[in-house]
Length: 286
Image (cartoon, rainbow, N blue to C red; front, side, top):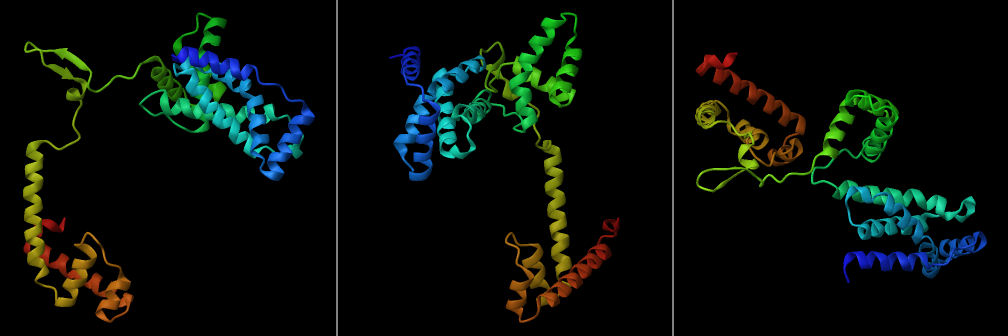
């Protein structure tokens, strides 16, 4: 059975589920709430599967499988059934609509693009309403420029024009793999988009310079450490030169002194190191 046939079968099954009268719905909700009756919860959920399917159909424009949207909506429906309060005297369909929509929207945001967008409420509103508002504005006045449309949408949704422009560009373009070829050279080996990205790594000459400077500073530090006594050396190594930095309390316990005394020794040792380094290498004074 292909996906289209599976979708049709699921829709037919859901549409055949009986409606619940208000009193029956309330009785089932009370049985679930008071007695954790799973059968009661399942009957409520099944009776509202047509609501899930109707909402899933509205989100088909995002290019995701209908069956996946229905499945996510059903998860939201079950969540609504678990949280529903019969005492509020509200029909379950009214309450469940929010949970179904939220579950589908979260799924779309996770899967629509490999590039994640914002997940704030304003960004979600922009994502799900931009195309509808753009079409409505363009239909109302075909003379509107893109800039004018973006400004109208930004005002309507309470976001910045820059956010609207960025989302519009994102919705208008397809994801492109970094392994996609950019061009072909004479040898037939493809140049990938990844090859064209600028590297954040330092240039080779900068890497060599940094390495030499680091080794030089390390030699200077080793020389300055000779000015420290044994206890000062232990504290500086544990507090400043170790990957697993020791706490003042740990060193105090080890050396038999208070943590305040450890702090004082550390401060004095750092000052001695600074003087030793400046004395041997005056250029470090700046």
